[in-house]
Amino acid sequence: MPSLLSLYRKIFFGRKPGWDQKPLPEIRVSVPEVALDNSAVARYSDVCEFKFDGKTVPPTFLYILAFRLHAVIFTHDAITFPLLGMIHLKNRITQYRTVGAGEKVRLECALKGSEQTESGLEFDLVSKAWVADELVWEAHSIYLYRIESAGRRARPPKGSEMAWDDAKTWTLDEKLGWRYARASGDYNLIHLHPSLSKRFGFDRVLAHGMWSKARCVAELMDKIGARPCTLDVTFKLPLFMPAEVTFGAQAVDQGWRFELRDQKGRRPHLSGEVVFHD
Image (cartoon, rainbow, N blue to C red; front, side, top):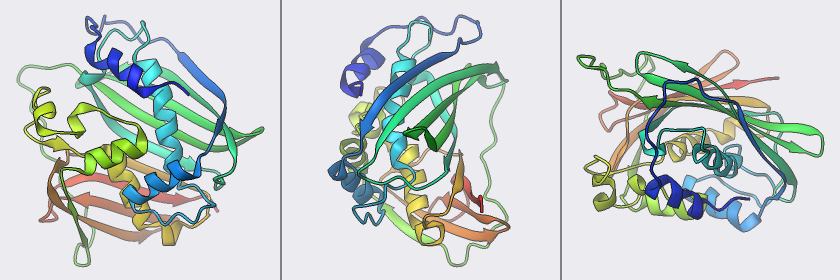
């Protein structure tokens, strides 16, 4: 597996001129065999609050391995804009079957086309994991390279029409970014310390979006179990720490929908759904 530390050196200290107005090429990266380490799974499970039994890998865990391949693509010469100009818009994970902690997987990630929107350049990274010849896991990550447009102002998102009477409250401290970084290997500076995040225009540290997703999924694992499913989220608002957030879920046809909102339960940080395949 590639080292995120060396890749982050390129990401944070390398220079890229900006988008060259050209469609992005297809770029494919793969690793033929990755052993799943129980201690790494346990650290990840602990910070995201999964109940790891030593046997079954949480459905979001393989993403932190796939992200290393994302970083390889981000540093490719054909990507002419910097990672720091990108926003993670959406993430969809499909678990075709549960993955055992002792299994070895083959990982592949591909940049699959791009599209210019009014907000900037959107592109899709598709990650897949196989055990032998069986596709067991797949993820789609939609990223945006923002292009500023004068006079355009985004409206703040509103929560959906979910009942919010029984929402749970979670308290997040500003050290969460460090704990998740140690568990995931994702040491993006905007998640680690206020003095570092201020260098990139943020007054406080931001929670990792994929921690937020994983924490929501962990809360629903008693309902998900080992069932094949798709876990789909849209990231709405940045989550600055320290903070108190609220989580709510509601049963729907073929699964569940859920949101992670601010302390008052008004503005969503992410909206998501679980769709079962059986």
